[in-house]
View 1 (tube, one colour):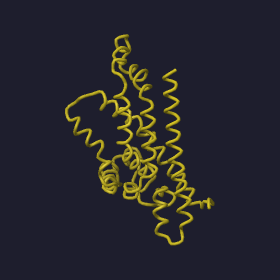
View 2 (cartoon, helix red, strand yellow):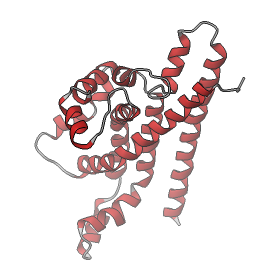
View 3 (cartoon, rainbow, N blue to C red):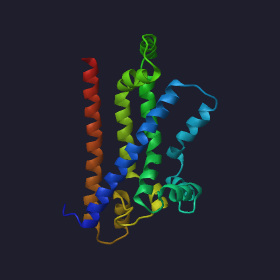
View 4 (tube, rainbow, N blue to C red):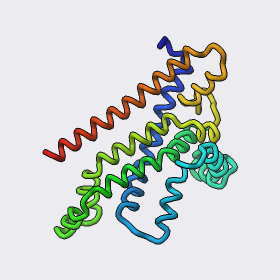
Length: 230
């Protein structure tokens, strides 16, 4: 049952690669956005907040189409990045990572924002009065206390990236070995009669990876809480 074909192993490895890159590249910006929304008031904050969470409510195909228009080879951003830095996203695994990062970003920011909001601002103010600059307050006080939320946000984004399908297949298609992730491989097998064994294998792998990620997140959060209590 678990005799994976080379194409299945490639799809699994690519999914892990895409999800990991999506989370690692978006995490610093997610922490910054979470802090900004939790600690600052500014004109247009409500509109900014709504735009940030827009990928959660838009059909994923619409998000993928917008990415194709903007980051495609003929799109304004895509052409600039290709000509200036040699970066190409359309129909590449990098485009899949970009789509997954955008789809999972609202979940990441929400978890981080709630965690930062739970940090007592009086602690930050006390550190500031003792001479700590804003950067030291953030990295020495706020971020360590909000770390469980950061971990939870990263895991949520990873799980979302692992299961993303609509935006990815619209933006980068379903190219075996290049953009065919776990979800798109499962979709492809649904179109092939007699591919039930492969469907079961990939489904079990998807469930196992997602469950393992959530389990690891819970263990890290509990460990962090125990260290803070000590």
